[in-house]
Length: 506
Image (tube, rainbow, N blue to C red; front, side):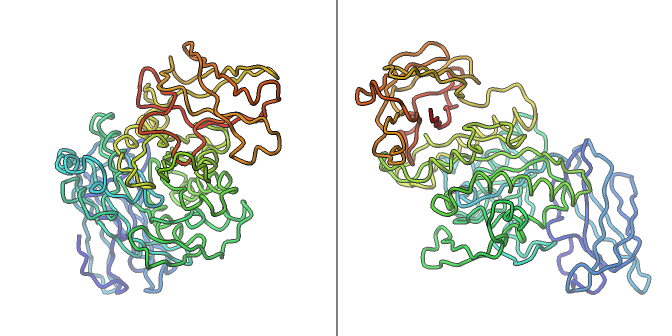
């Protein structure tokens, strides 16, 4: 690929993230190749003995007076690698041909969010082994966008940290919090292996310390009653003296929108810490509207080729403080991440899946647990089930029924989603019988598990609440609710799948 051309002189070029070694979306979807050149010029693409032709657009697309050309391929089921040639005549009639090499066809995943998505492979436990083994996966290709905002939606990236690269110890083992995203890589690697080595393209576009509002288009913000021109302070991880402000939608405009001409299979997301204290009460709305707006934008800008309900996975917030007594706002964000249902997938937003991470405590690292292999495993199991319809177990026990009789000493909770429950310890449940005063977290008291029978557990209600009406029941309602992998409930058949946090008001 020739990166030395002078942009704006009429010479055709690919969009700046259409590069050697990339992955394009495989059949049954149709990939889109696009770029810039002179207006109203016949543009020809050759790949694998097929020829496509289109006219570049008449109107300029940027301040260099370049016009966009775009070609939609027929569905490609072969992996490749392929070379893709694009030709366009200059004003003087000279035919210019540009080529990208070593292009694979597979599934393309967008990986976005804040610092726990930005956290690189080099920052996690077992990083050395992971980096050393990366070269065993040459059909996984990775790309990382630079941290650049924009006040308006733009067609091309303003910066690239890592060009499309074949997986190797160099491309996966980049600098701390730079590249490659550990969660993105570990998710993609697990999916790649489970699908028999299918090529996977991983696009990391995340920024530490960022609130969800920065990643949403204005219309989605307005649906949640949020102004689109609000400045949001952020403090990027590792730069404590360099606090800067961005405005709502800035990162959607510059780090998401440019990719929406590209056909993708799905997205994964790890964010929410920055909203534990900022528009916390709106997160169920902002998260659902962000997902819907991304899907609509991709679907529209790829001419309905990208699925309007493309799979969207996320990591439920992990831990924060090392003090297990602190409730904080993390439990509320976790609940809102499920759109106040308590689990996904659910009927609020379709084709959404998650990894529970609140039991992956890593004391020295607080908000950035290094236990990302577990996150990658849990998220990939959910992705294989929801995004690929694979018959795999992908979630821990999910509450299906709570039975409590007024004045009773016990609460019975029945679960679904698993064949059997592993009860790892009896702690983590709380009840409150103080009515409207239960908004005070100090009035919640422990309720211990006294019995388990396959899919039902029995809680003993605290003596202080016996004879009184229970107001609510909750489970793992703390910033850091348990020791490492010591939540109360896991799947019996997959002991690395914990039950998600839960809340019920009677």
